[in-house]
Length: 219
Image 1 (tube, rainbow, N blue to C red):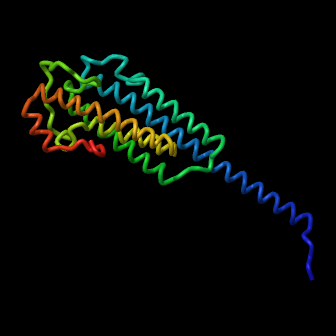
Image 2 (tube, rainbow, N blue to C red; image 1 turned 90 degrees about the horizontal axis):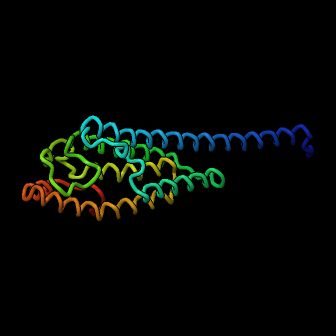
Image 3 (cartoon, rainbow, N blue to C red; image 1 turned 60 degrees about the horizontal axis):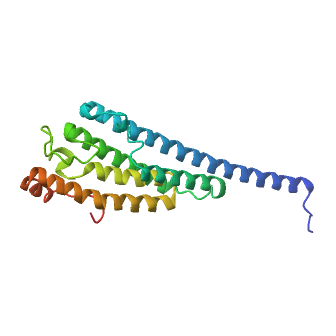
């Protein structure tokens, strides 16, 4: 004997389906909110860290530019692209998230921020956000601490920090864009800076560079 579904059973199934749909949307919304919150916190910490590290360890060159918010048009454009991508995901692909990618992003951001801050603290007055063409009286070749392993730890830190921020947002397109753009920037900047350092410190820099690494792929 086949018993036809009652109206109550049908209504219960509909309610369960709607509840499941609601919980799914709520879960995606919470995840997206968490991603944006964590990203925003790390972004603020980065720029505050740039300013206060300079202010404490190299006060003579501290200005409002030390926040590094308006460091370049390319940096601003990259940020805008990543925000647009995240907004598109919110409205059209809220389910395209990866918890593993989010966690790896947090790891890379913490690693990058730690390395960059250590570089600024270790260098002290020898650190500057801009390449110094002329050697100052207090400019010395720093080879201790994190510099005994990485010869450009601030660049190493920024490279992985920038990629990590996009992994936190699960911005698949921006992860690739940031990785390529940052690599291209350092591909030109690092050789130029090293020529300047060789001019300042001569054979001492050659010896130092032979014992350390850059840490960015193929650089």
